[in-house]
Length: 176
Length: 269
Image 1 (cartoon, rainbow over the protein chains, first blue to last red):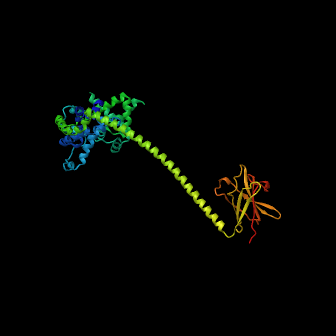
Image 2 (image 1 turned 30 degrees about the vertical axis):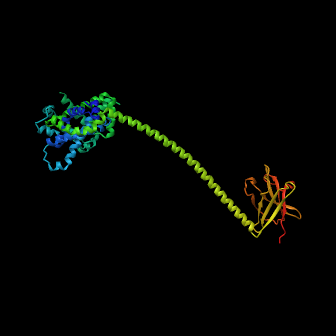
Image 3 (image 1 turned 180 degrees about the vertical axis):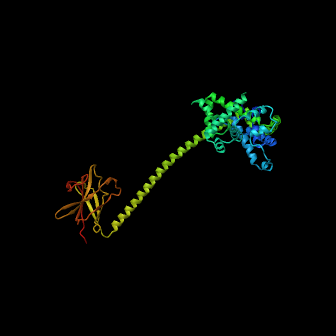
């Protein structure tokens, strides 16, 4: 849940508010970064950078433009993609066998304690392949609706309605 | 707007992803602020997505990473926070701000006043300059006329015919400088009284035997002409010139009772 008062405090430079924001979002942001970079150490570094950016640029967040979660999601994806494009990453590249978030769920066992990842893993596999694709592109990789439509060769409107059905399914599973 | 339909369209999921254009996102933000059920839906979507991304996060030491972030934060926070938290400083900044604003306004007012004064001054200077220009032009015109007159007087083909005052105006005097070749008569009317309102001087060329007057023109705008020199066409074989006072517009024949001046042309040498 977005706490507007907390965001305002953050924007006023309140460090306690920042710590609370970190508590609320760091784990999911770490998940996003990790899904892109696939390296725990590097993902941790990028996580630090992302939260420093949140602190330093908090005044540029405007609720008229979108959700606070979306704002930090963008910062996290951009920072991760910037790292992939950087020289350091190219020199350090590994062969990645997994290629979306589902693979991470399937291939790893050291999940973060807070989420019942094993439970989710079980449910995720129930999702249709197209749902896995849509959620991977739109949520984890930050594709726009248009880019997703092109990538999956799907009409724009279909991206919207299918994705809605997929998220509904996910919500049902999480509510169980 | 049908809110249920709006929610089920799938736009809110794209909104949380950040997959919409900026304009579309702004529109959703607006709807979200107006409709609590939309806000609730967005929060639920966000919640599900947060759980999903948390599920792919490897285990990590959140506290240790936060501590490292806070170390870097502290340095930056110092510059950022002090001006905001220091109330005294804040107020002083505010007072100085107001004082500066008032000074600026007063200054602007004076500048504005000064500008208006300068503009007025400039306008009157411009008017003066225009007046002087006119005077120079007039003087130049006068000088040209004078030169022209001198040329007329010096022209060997010009003969001067003095016209003496008659019964109607014994003190009056005028002269005609007649250039017979160019068929021009210059009337010097300096010594004629100003004509009464509604009257005008008319110049006549006369032949004496028998007495035949021919009008050669009116001394129009008499009072406005400074040097009182009038140029008229005269193609006649004049033997004398006379000037009468006539009703405005002139007359066919001279009114002899109002004959002001009269003079005969000297016989050619």
